[in-house]
Every structure is written in structure tokens, then in C-alpha cells.
Length: 67
Image (tube, rainbow, N blue to C red):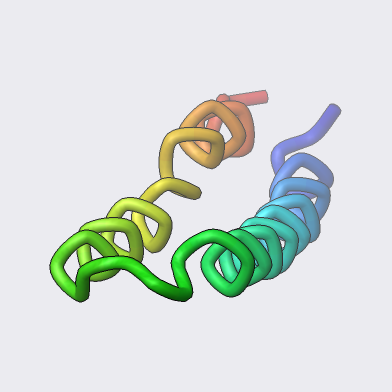
């Protein structure tokens, strides 16, 4: 597979990953974090906001692999 095809597939996959990740994080926050301390909620939002990076790293590595 050529690098242009991998980048196209990877870009679409990254967009889907971020969209699904954010929706799941929002749904969990609305169901489980409604009556907790503000500091714990802030920590959750930081972790959830940066958490998508770990699954995205192998995808970006695959996208940038030479032909």
C-alpha cells in the first residue's frame, strides 16, 4: 500500500477515533460524574481529553511508514 493511501485511511480512522472517543467520554461523564468533587472531575477531563493519543500513536506510526 502506498503512503498516500495509508495517510487517507489513517486520517479517516483518526477522525472516527476522536469522534467516538469524545462521545464515549461525554456519555460517561454525564452518567457517572454528576455528583463528585470538582477536582476529580477536572482530572477525569484531562485524562479523557488526552487519552485518545495512546490508541492514535500506532495508527500515526503506520501512516508514516515508508513505501
